[in-house]
Image (cartoon, rainbow, N blue to C red; front, side):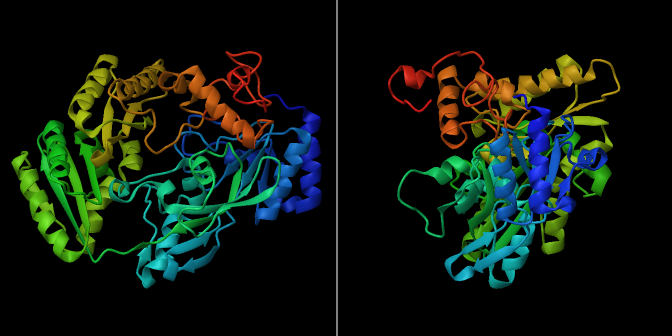
Length: 490
């Protein structure tokens, strides 16, 4: 969407008057600090940056944007991997990293109310002395914000057993794209009426800005046991994964790394994974001690039966941390073996893992591109790392072709183009591969109910925005739902 210079200037003048010049950044060099999120391949310098301290600041910024028809984008810690917080060059970037208060930890009711800038791991640190923690655990949990988790419906290693962020949010305070402050849900588990909360979690900031979230707290397990199993091949590791699930065991996590990912982790953090491994599994069980003990023996037996040539069991918290250190550092560690890489994110049915992994390898070999695999094997959530050197002519195009081909493989096998990283700016172009035009129109109709002017994080999720106030795309004229008599709003 195009925005007149006077529109943005008008917003800046209002915000400086309302918030003070120290919290409205107009200097170009300072604005460059926020030109990308964790997907650094996409960079846009925001038109202006607002450092919000509370919901009233956010509402003031959004109302000014609404009055002037200026787009806005919300940003937490900026760790997203799909460009969901990519700024708008002619818009306002609302930064919420100063909103880090845990307003309430109601452990008796297993709820906490947090501001959006609260770091994921900090909530666990604050509540673990009382025997609770926040279960969603993205790999970036030591730096990512809960507001970002809510926007992207983030996952993590332990989502196999405990579910994604949407399973742990019971309420939000929201500034709508019109600037209205509303409360949706609360501490109750199942409020009556339409599931607006379900629509908001994972909407990637296209329906407004969350200013507070009420989340579930999970009781710390009585027992946690972790093992590392080394296999000669990815097929063997995949077979072990399927055998564990088929046996009725539901681990807290089953993570897989291939040889290239192991090489990167060893170079970065010296995690000491078994030499000669073509793949490793990190399997963690938690729960009542008696249950964990019995299931853990089953997991060891099933790994050995599938061909594991070494199984290491963490004897204490330090050894457990070392096992996880290799896995948790894998994304960053790949930077030691490749100048550039794309973190792809797709999901497939778990039983398709061996075939899809072989096809990914073939795809990379045919393009002359290395692909490292580190992912949540238990739920088929893939994170192939497509390596390239941006200084080599044509390397970026080859890497992007392989990354796109991996998403095609996910769809061919009944999966999805995203598992937990969201669509953002990166995968918007892939949405028509998964959804029909009518599907996308229906999603747009939902979005328009919240944001009729299309100013809330435009350019994300949808490939060719064509409703609300945005530029028309494939379908000109009336919305199909209007034509069919189903809706008359648009």
